[in-house]
Amino acid sequence: MKRLLTILLLCWCAGCVYSARPIEPVKLYGQLQVRGTQLCNQQGQPIVLHGLNIDWSTDWSRRYNKKFMKSLKRDGRYPLLRLAVDVDDETNGYLTHPQQAMAALTAVADAAIKQNLYVIIDWHTNDMHTAEARQFFGTLAQRYGHYPHIIYEIYHEPIEDTWTSVKRYATEVIGEIRRYAPDNIILVGSPHWCQDIHLVMNSPLDGFQNIMYTVHFYAATHGDDLRQRTEEAVNSGIPVFISESGAMEASGEGQVDLESEALWLALLDRLGISYIRKYLTRNDL
Image (cartoon, rainbow, N blue to C red):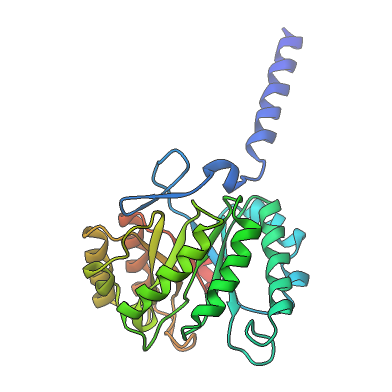
């Protein structure tokens, strides 16, 4: 009897160790896909991913290394990283220093992939650089096209562009990505800081699979109007992804509105929308 109890105890301990192992999101969910308005796992079951934004720095590879990725995987709350690659910065942006920028990006993306985390590669600009974007995403898709880990965000925040021009741009860039990455999720920005999702609702892209459209909110600035607009878009069949959000004002400063953010998060949970947090509050720590 004593021996039996010992065996049962050892089995229970082994089960505890197993359950405490870090979750590897890509092993758990596999190749993501879009069905209707929902982000889904490889089996087509709806999932919701929460992620963190990493602002651009050519020092990425030192700060966001293997140790950081392992700690993120152990934490388990954020299976997704958004790598915001500054396109226009004259000091270290992609347009002026493409090789340096690409080296910094791929080092962090590779570290995340080794830990089986999902990665959004964000073309972080407010201006349309069609030729450069095609080259950038074509290069990345050739490198990562066989990895289910990668999500391509092809235009951070269109500001002055019309939705018609963004659609033309997206068609070219998506076409280049699909030459090498036929299945990965692609995120498309909507006009005016990713606020005008109603324009997408009236005229979505045609002929592409696994496409989602981005909305950005900052809770102290964006309230009921944008929440209603977002819900109407989803109800009309538009797959929405919140690729940037925060509790403060849109400037990244000012007051923190936790009440408005709570309304946002409740809406996203109800609609099954995945989201990225750019700035965290104490409640998130």
